[in-house]
Length: 286
Image (cartoon, rainbow, N blue to C red; front, side, top):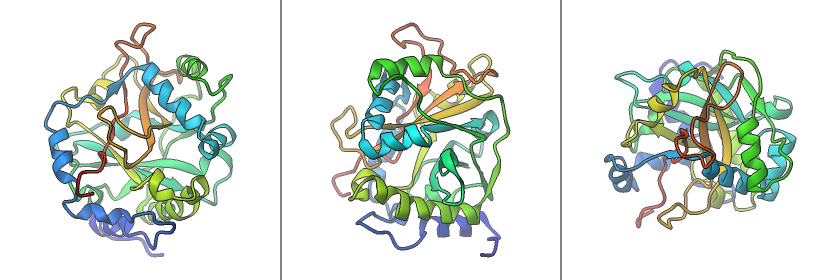
């Protein structure tokens, strides 16, 4: 498969990544304005994406207690680590766009991962914005807590230390396109017989659109040299809306020792972990 010459063409093909199975909706539906009004309303400045370590533990515990997802997290991967520069934004890039990928050629914990790119903002055409290449995590980890209960997951988050600082490898667009398709058509149906109900779109977007400028706050913490992501699970958000992507992504900054930077008190107040990524819940027309 030849290398695509422009980012625009590559991303258009990436979101049109082939026939989906088991009623999973193709991600190119985001090219229409459907659901964009709610996204615009949420981006007006009153939404916070910062969560506490306890809230993170609840979602990770829920992920672990989903039979197929939890098994994967324990046997293969619960998340990965990016270097800091992947999330450093400038005046032209207002957010990080993370794609769900599945590389069937990789062994063990490197099969399911997030590939990162940068985008100008969250719009109906956000999936057409990215750099020529994406980045892969430089390291991965499994869940090794004592149990799947929230208390033990919280202990895991607070004591998690894994790996030395590294450099995130580049992932060419052509490879990313195939691996996004493999995630949607191969891995996702193995988790749920109705994969479209588990995850509607194969990406999530974290942007500087909320009142708290979450990515900047994440990286501005003393000693932050990278970003760790955990997979979580949530069926409905705090407003009672069923969520399009029930597999959630939680981001936390790490220091040079690979430890999560948690500066809050024992209840998590003051921690800077971010989660509430787009796409938003369905609109009335979705």
